[in-house]
Image (spheres, rainbow, N blue to C red):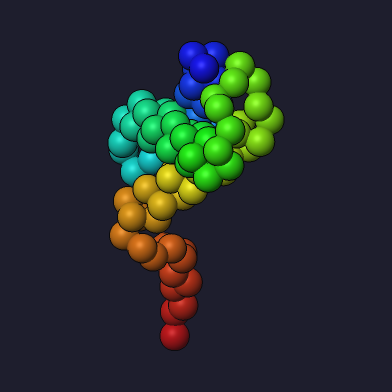
Length: 96
């Protein structure tokens, strides 16, 4: 059980670290993404165990996939909220 939870957390930490490299952080601390990724992975892995009724085992590929998907969803939602819900397009300045 302990190794399964550690696996989810590590999966979330890795995805949070990757997100810090791919996304504009708007001056935020990169640790926020790492922590949110780990939290999302814990939620996703726990949700899989709850829905499927399976125990948390040392290695369950489906629970890791659910943990990864949940971590990515949490990070996407966080960055969408953080960006103000809009995508800034560069303005084209035209002289007349």
